[in-house]
Picture 1 (spheres, rainbow, N blue to C red):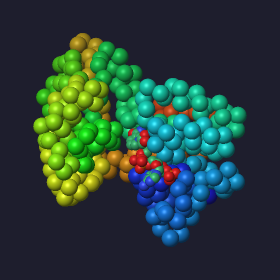
Picture 2 (picture 1 turned 60 degrees about the vertical axis):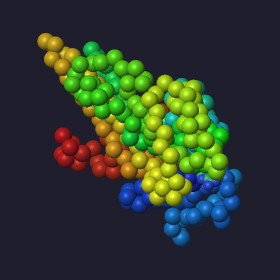
Picture 3 (picture 1 turned 45 degrees about the vertical axis):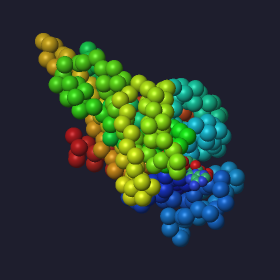
Picture 4 (picture 1 turned 90 degrees about the horizontal axis):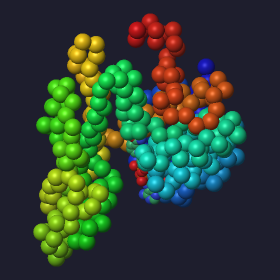
Amino acid sequence: SEKIRIGIVGYGNLGRGVALALWQNPDMELVGIFTRRAPADIDAPDASTPVLPVDGLTDRRDDIDVLILCGGSKEDLPEQGPALAAHFSTVDSFDTHARIPEYFEAVDGPARAAGTTALISGGWDPGMFSINRLYGEALLPDGETYTFWGKGLSQGHSDAVRRVPGVAGGVQYTVPSDVAVDAVRSGSRPELSTREKHRRECYVVLADGADAAEVEQAIVTMPHYFADYDTEVHFISAAELGRDHGAMPHGGFVIRSGTTGAGNAQVVEYRLQLQSNPEFTASVLVAYARAVHRLNRRGQVGAVTVLDVPPVLLSPKSPETLRAELL
Ligand code: NDP
């Protein structure tokens, strides 16, 4: 059968991850990488992959089945998502949780009008975690859902640390509290405050002449980002920052703790432990690109989320094979 032809839009961490993930999926092929920057400035994953300006993309309708949109959720996707869904089936990882209903509507209209299928908010949270929250609620209606994140590098909080005057560089890790996780796993259904669930660890390089105590105070009292958490600030050298904090690990748990029948406790857990957040997110998007292509062929058009996609469509294997191997 013919390969699913994929285009990547935007080539940052996630875009690089998608190119790598496609090599592990022989039923798909990478047609090209489309960027807003000068193509010559982009380090292509291999010599045979064309890197092209995103402006010419709409001329390529006939040779691309699905575009994987790898732009940022804040500035890029709100513009690119609806515009590109008017021409192509798409997959993206829009992760501004509060804005997802509004983004869904913005993509749904153009996709329906064009007969394309647009999966929004793929990845792991939103994404795989959302599916597991749904399973938890549906299977254990008398219960409580808990999501813990980390240990992981948070891009938004790292940016906030780097904006503090006197900070030359730094990263922030979100760390789930072991005490809170153990309490949830025990089935006791604790009520947990924000401060009890996660703590925050910052690794900071001070600018020349900056005062460590002042910088620490500015970080730990920062509203929204740090004030509601127990935050540790560790001062390190620029060399240590480069050596020890260049990776992008992340992960977490979704736990549903419920009670059934005669009062029996039932605890269900889904766990991710990721050495590379963007590479895992990219792997999820690639599997959903396969599903989107199949949905579109079946005539299901418009915006969809991971909650709408039958799991069987994610696999390169046939339903018959999956029934024999996995049931
Ligand atoms: P990046 O900042 O690395 O890339 C975003 C865009 O910025 C790229 O598509 C690229 O577009 C542009 N860009 C990349 N590098 C440069 C550069 N050096 N100079 C100028 N522009 C550049 O973001 P990520 O790839 O790390 O993440 C993308 C989004 O993925 C995040 O905003 C987040 O919303 C989402 N995400 C979702 C997850 C989920 O679970 N749902 C998990 C992880 C991430 P262009 O090539 O056109 O210039």
